[in-house]
Image 1 (spheres, rainbow, N blue to C red):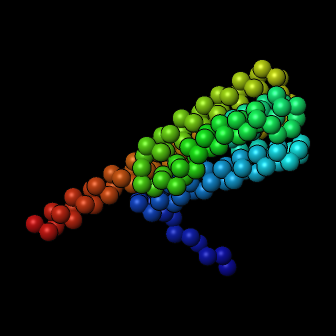
Image 2 (tube, rainbow, N blue to C red):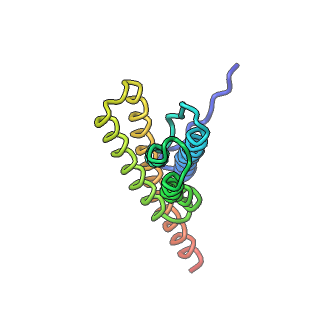
Image 3 (cartoon, rainbow, N blue to C red):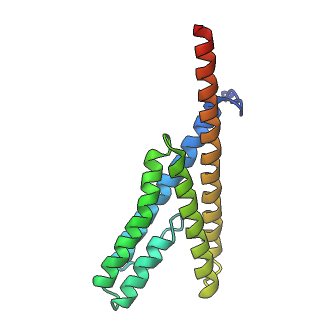
Length: 170
């Protein structure tokens, strides 16, 4: 007989922590897939993972295009730009439990990335398969919004708990 799970109250701290951690996991997966895409591109593979940031990949791709398909000075400069962009996500993931500013920075960066994906999609009339990539981008934007929302909820709960604790000491 299957064991029934106890439902979690959606207004509880436990639920907010689960949601925050789930969103952080999605961001980590995106960072990993973006790095894998960069390695695949530099190795000459003609494949990439969908669940990744777009700008680092295409910045590097254009750099390699200007270098004639190899790795030259333009590609290195493009890689530096891509790493700087990706650093926002890495730092955001690392510090998202402690600072809302990094969550906002990640959200803005990923919205810019999504707009770039849409621009590339419409400018180059990408294949219908790219619609899945766009849907995944919107889903990750939603995850980042949820991360921000649950982070705000957790901070409010912590402030309320501190106030109650100090009142109990008086």
